[in-house]
Length: 228
Image (cartoon, rainbow, N blue to C red):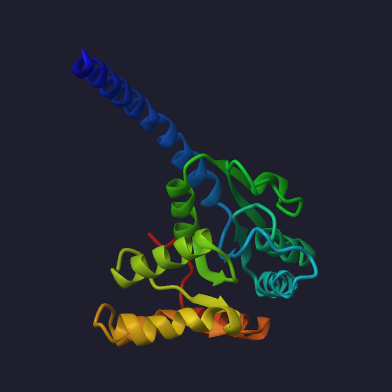
């Protein structure tokens, strides 16, 4: 009897998994259709928990404003905190402001600085991450938590393994990121788990001027296009 119950449960899961393919496909199709016409963008990541007046929130506003003035759109995760700051800076500059929202039990809600026609909703993190990676000409990574680290290291891994084109990955905030960079150098590199050239995939800065200089220098003479 117990074996039959287990078998019934697994069969139900298999059926649900098969139908989920269509929902996943729908998210990809909708995302590709909307993102493909937006043009060159830079993604900004960071904590959802900071508020206006926090130094990193205010810096993210300035960074995204400068990036927008340089001719790039801004993509964020669409929620509060650093995401809101990124869209806010784009909005102040009159630039393209995109939000890739995710359905979460807490923290996530649309911020008011996303363009009305450029707010996309996702149920699946992995579909959403594909949109960030495919349509970004650079990642600007502000201080954040596990989600920020997830997006950071996925991009590094995809570039390291030549699954996508190289693009600038810029960490903002020496005080916040220095410990991680030191650990990568002194532990991962020392153990031989990465190559010295892998360190070149990351830039560490503190100002909006440095962010824009890195992006402009990288794309000077290059053609802008999706990453795969």
